[in-house]
Length: 419
Image (cartoon, rainbow, N blue to C red; front, side):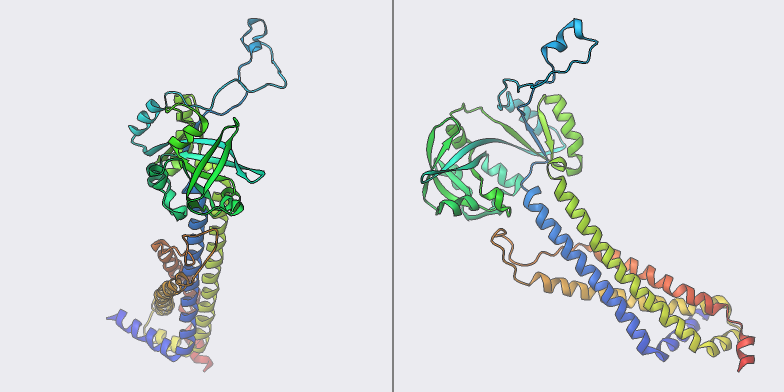
């Protein structure tokens, strides 16, 4: 019964200062809505930018790196075993890029329950023949269907069909940058020259656009069979094994494990794309910092309003305490006022933030480097709304607790005597 009276008194006090109460609630509402919208937009942008590279990058890449041998002949000599041997101008060992027994390696990887999928690949350095000019290029020989399934290859095809690489003999999907330089169109025949001096004619069946112009000027794609013919190698030749894991975060640890077990070089996605993860982290920190600052500012607004309310309602507080209400009851009244402002502002702010996100998501966005993106990116993660509401309630509680404590300590005798 007592709680009912406390709520009625709190409502009466809020209605007595309804304009200030409304302003405080609106402040919380806009803080929450901007917090949610800002985080949704920034995280959507992060996923878009990182996806341009991370989606196309294997979680672990196995390959044979051309590098000097770590063991030199002098290291094998017993006479110099206890010495520090310094050898200068070491030349790379006479090794090949080919991965031997790749079928057995792939079979073992597919039986590993930590691995989602495996795809083999060949990288061929070529020259695109454009009149009298030879342009540097790289042709990636891929298993088309696996590349589409594991690494979203189809999402980056701006024209043509990726399946034509398998069905059309001696075909190529050109990077959009390379196609623009060579003025190539779908169905055109282009010439490429390998580093061995062999020249081949390839039919253009599509264009690839990764969103990174410098990459698109160089890289193109062909089926793994076509690439083997370009290089003049046997049908078992593979230079890279691409691995997609069930858990992306385990890539560094598994890369070391596979490197030791298979005796191959292994590169994990975190190492290959460290700069992108750093950029995403910084943008997220900035977004959270700005959003939390907005909520703190709105908290100060509630604090000021409740302080003014206490000074204006000293008589009311004195009468309440003189009629038997304890200091804890007065504290509950003002905390109730603060929490009412915070909760109503948080709920309305989350709803307004969702509407603002929908509005941004509907704004047309067109960029030549991002053919699959038609509107501004927004991430509708529920965690942003939960964080915003919890933080808003916490801030409004703290903003109301100090004025409420001050009100609970008012001495009714002093106030009434002064009147």
